[in-house]
Length: 170
Image (cartoon, rainbow, N blue to C red):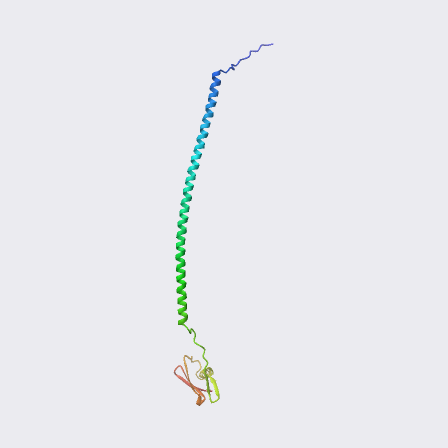
């Protein structure tokens, strides 16, 4: 059998090393606690600053909304006043127009001549005069016609375009 030589490792830890390790651990814990406290303080300050910014923004928005509402109310009031004035003017103009224009169209007319029991309308006499003129003169256009009605002759005399004359009987 062969003999083996064991290598020995010095595993002894000194009190000083234990204390140093524990001190380092305690210092690390203290540093972590300080960092956590600092983080909490920074978060608190950050939250306060954010709240202040939000509050200022909300106040500015509220002021802007109030100003816009006042302006809109003023504009609306002006528009209502203009509309009322315009309506009053339109009603006044309408009533004046209505009273000024009693007759917008010419009334229809129907002239009937009666003499010794006979009766004939002016319209029938005009149609007869125009038919007779068209038969004698042809394609001459009629611009004006004047009728002279003589019941005692039972005839109507006409002048067309201040140039052509003729007679039609009742």
